[in-house]
Amino acid sequence: MGRRRGFDEAVVLNVVRDQFWTTGFAGTSTYDLMEATGLGKGSIYKAFGNKHDLYVRVFSDYCRDLVAQAREQLQGGPKAVLPSPMARLEHYLVSLASAFAGESPHRGCFLTKVTADRAGEDEEVAQTARRAFDDLADILAGAIRDAQDAGEVADHVDSSALGYLLLSVIRGIDSIAKADVDAATLEQAARSVVALIPRAEPPRAEVCPPLKPARPASATARGPGQRELEVRDERGGDMGGDDELEADQSGAAPRRT
Image 1 (tube, helix red, strand yellow):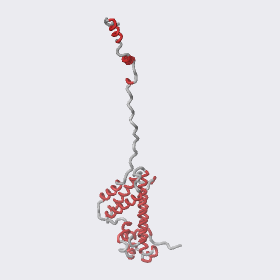
Image 2: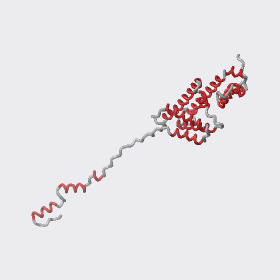
Image 3: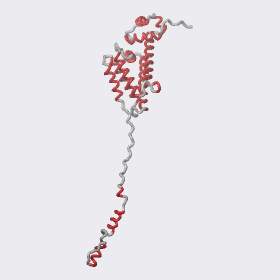
Image 4: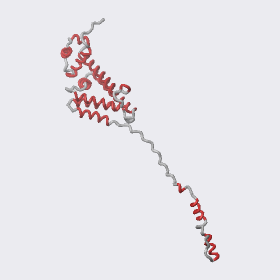
């Protein structure tokens, strides 16, 4: 049975991460880590390896937790924070903008900081950062696909491309917040990018063709009086035509009965 460590590993790792977060890899010495953790040099090396090993360890742990948090905030189903996929997406982006703006001092995201500081010269750091970015973009793309399935976002939208676009906006807000841009501006920027996502068109209501107007009853039904007039027309005049003919033949006035 191995000897039990006399320290809480999770606590030590959090302290080490905060030290690197504040002073960076190059600005942190092993003696800085010894002072921050209260551990001797031998204990640190035995438990975690050298400074670079410890740096990669805390960075990997941070990326894992960041991805898990994004997945939890944007997932659907019974554990969803909000029923609408687009509402969840907006809530997630605005909450990040608010968090970045509310920091004092503005340290920003550890993923952003480490990527800027070390990814260009440290392949292991670069690979870890790339996996984290890919995972975050995929989660954001999944939120867009959920919105498409819910009829909130247009079907023609490329969810993968939009996932990386949203991730780029988040990283940009993170950087801008360090210049002390106010929270209202950053939050509105997050809302605006969500508002620019093409929405699905609402279903069109079926339009029935107009009904032909009914013919008036007088055009189809003929009463006795109308029939009598038709008979007169057919005989060349009104019912008095016979009297006029009789008068012409006898020279006498027509007799009326």
